Each structure stands twice: as structure tokens, then as C-alpha cells.
Length: 401
Image 1 (cartoon, helix red, strand yellow):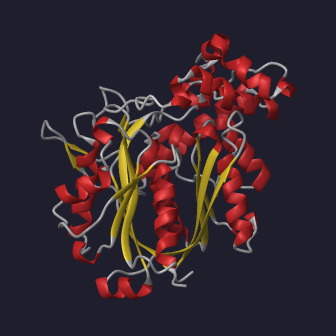
Image 2 (cartoon, rainbow, N blue to C red; image 1 turned 90 degrees about the vertical axis):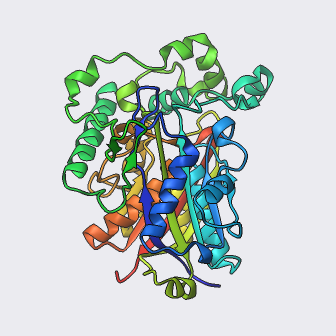
């Protein structure tokens, strides 16, 4: 079995996921095309690429019709480079990386590009109108709830306080602003020229002036959904909660974003032939599922599974990149795995910088690699929890560690 290596990583900056966002005027296909062209400018020969795999959570309209193949053709990579699109909800991008790495290890691919894209401003969340979102019978049979209700349920079961969640919200904003000021993302972020001729190259959702006082004044974000029947569905599955305390606000929830990210992956032979230096080895991945009402615990479970499978412990991990699917789940992971703020999301996360569903996991794997390189670390893990109780994690080992 061959080893799979991360050879390069690029992403766009993340724009606000609304019509006021800087990337609203750029289609999701064009975001991927621009990153593909950036990779060729950095030395990747498209003729050597065996496949392009892109994750996207809402595969409809501008994100439908196999976006990966469409982008690859538009990028001028030739008719001979395939393209496929995967959907595992919020874990789509990291799943694209995991699946592609596994195919490399199995010998089915030599060199490939994997990542994700989401343009929430152009293809809104739930716009695919799937039964999980829109069919009342399916919702009742599964017990499907909004992710925010699941977050408040988890916070209630863990006995979290509003003050604890707000403190995490301030922490991730502070880290994210400091990381940009230090130039942490300079190597990977590809500037995007906008229709008006300006250039977009910085995550625009960060609020560096966030304080505890400001967050304390924010209303609970999901109390209305709970009162409209979502609490009843959640409590039917988890009566032990008694009553759901609605504690998360927009300041402690992931912000909706537009963005894209791509990683170049390959085996040692093809990396050498392409003149690309392996930066990290993909040790493995884990895909798990859990109760679709509690939902957001699956990312942590995937981390625990992939670490154990590799014969490691949480203490061996130098960097945890964990999708900030609400503050309560971040605090749980930190407590359960003893992953303090210096190891978990050291440069901030999706609460501060934005959650571009299909792209988030790929951004996190790339960010994990870059942080390992900065701190001379060895092992890093990235994970995302998705809707319906899905979770995916990828474990990497920095080369020359």
C-alpha cells in the first residue's frame, strides 16, 4: 500500500454568506477554477492529475451538475482530467480529502486534487429542498432538528453556561484577528479579483473588537425555532435534558460564508515526477455517524477513532483543527481530549472566520498542515461534524518531523 501525501494547499478568503458579501458576485464554479489556475501557476502540471474531487453541501443550481468536472474543463485542464463532486453535508470538503487520500493509498490514483466549495450567498442553505429539511414525515420519523437546536441541546446536557460560551466566542475572534495580523494565511490564500476590479484576499467575517459585554447583549439565536416545535422533537429523543436552555447566539455560532479550498495529494512516486515536495503524510481518516438529534458530537468521535486507529493518544496531537459547529461542542472537545487553546484552533475557527460548508473541512486540513509547519509539530488532526449526525476526521503527520 502506498502512502498518500499532502503536496500543496490553496484557498480563497472567506466572504460573508449573503448578498452583501464580497464573493457574492463570483460563482462557486469560478472560485474553484481560480484555485485550479493558481495551482498550475505554483507548478502543478494538470496532465499529471488523475482526478479532481470537490465537496459541496448544496448540490443544486450553480453548485449542481458535477461542479468539479465543470470547473476542471473551464480551468483548461484538458478533457482527460476527470472530476467528481461529493456531499456529506458540512463534512463534504474533508470527506473529499479523506476519500481521495484512501484511493491514493490503495493505488487507484497517483496524483489528485481534492477540496471543497460553497457559495451560501448564491446557493442558500437548504436550497436543495431535500426531505431531511422539507418533508414533515421524514423530519418526524428521523427526529431531524436544526443544527442550532442540536447545539443548545448539547450545551444543556453538558451544563454549560452562557458566560462560558461567550468566552469561547471572544477567544476565537481574538485568535483569528491575531493570525491574520501575523501573516499566518499568506502562503495559502489566493487573491480573487472581483467584478468591480477590486481584489479580495482576507476573511471578512472576523470581528476583532468582539468583547464579552457585546456578546452578552446578543439574544439567543434559536429560541424561536425551539418554540415552533423543534424543542419538542429534540426532547422526545433526549428527555433527560428536561428543558433546552437556548444559550447560543450569532456570536457563538458558525457564521455563514462563501469560499473554496483545494489540496494537491499524491504518492511519493508521482510527487517526485511532478517536482512537488511532500509536506505531510495522511495517516488515515475516520467517518462516523451518531444520533441525528444530538448530531454535532460526530466530529469529536471521528477524531477519537482515527487517533486510536493510528496507535496514538490525544496527548500525541500537536494541532487539533475542529470545525466550530457552535461553542458548546468546542468546549466539550477541549475538556474530553485535554486540547487546550494553544493546540485546538490556535488561529481561530469558523465562528470567527466563517463556515463555507463544502469548503470548511479542506480549509481545516490545509490549516492544520501549515500550523504544524509553523510550530515544528508532528501530528495534526482536522474534523468536521455535519447534519444528520455525520462526522469525518483526517489525521496527518508532518514530513521531517
